[in-house]
Image 1: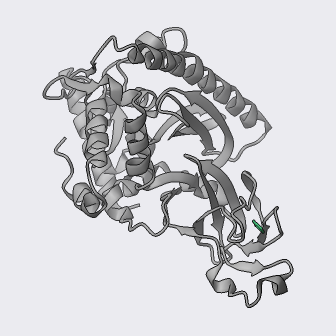
Image 2 (image 1 turned 180 degrees about the vertical axis):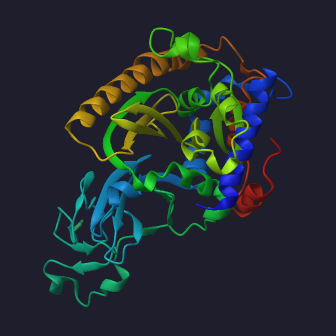
Image 3 (image 1 turned 90 degrees about the vertical axis):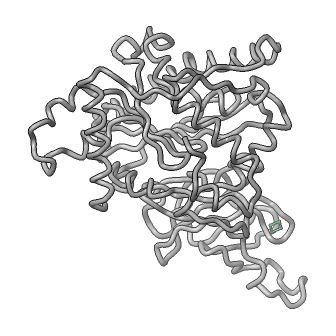
Length: 398
Ligand code: FES
């Protein structure tokens, strides 16, 4: 973890402290309007999948679940079958999970450890580097050049305990430009040292209706009044690295940092808040069997009206029986809150907006995070492949 990134965390804490003392938060310049149809128009939905989810790095997995050489994870991501592996050389690789023979999905969804992956249709087999290593009755295919018939590789990069991958093979990707140093900040969460202790899925509305909620503290004491809301403030501070945003509340606890030498400021205090990774991830932490991160991955569903959220739970402490019980309880609570409060409301929003009752929805000056998110979505769907690196280099001025 670099000193520069720690210095950035300290600067953010200082800014937060100044707001606490002044009783203020930052405000966006104006109220921002998002056309209501952006949330349900099928053409817009398809464009977002093609230009955002199929072109940008997504968080596909975690170092914690591919800890050892031979570990793998197979999954569907936005209708794309993906296989992640850690090779014998320790490198993480990503592939389209599609057989070179006649296109069967090679590895069933799930996690495990394997040296070989054998296609269930006719038995061709692949190694963890994606190479074709076995052809059943090879003589029936004449001279087989196995070197040309491996699994199709996807761009991938493992950073700060997260495995980023792109769903389109052969696409040129600049992970550094996309992340803009944000991965170095995320390294302070130490996700690479965590243990994956659970995973569950929640179905929800359009992915942006769902994602808006992760950038919004305004709703916490109102929508969540019957769960955790009464203790929560509704004001938020945003810090941005390109499209990626950290959301924090003005933290009165930071008053205690005043007068303490900076080198004694604990990293655990400096990383409080919700860390989002554009376009689809939110990282929040809770106290259960020790510190428990909930990493939510949002993916568009089969129509513009649907999404699926994968809630991944990463524990700082090694699980034991007692901690596991506490973690399971917290997982159930978070599933209930997201399903019965956030997405219950989101699904009703989805139907309500489709009535045409409102031409636009509003993001207040206090909802700068949501404003920035929608500006980035708009900018990305209007940007051609060639201009993408330039867009990330110059930003969109918010
Ligand atoms: Fe995989 Fe035939 S489709 S072996």
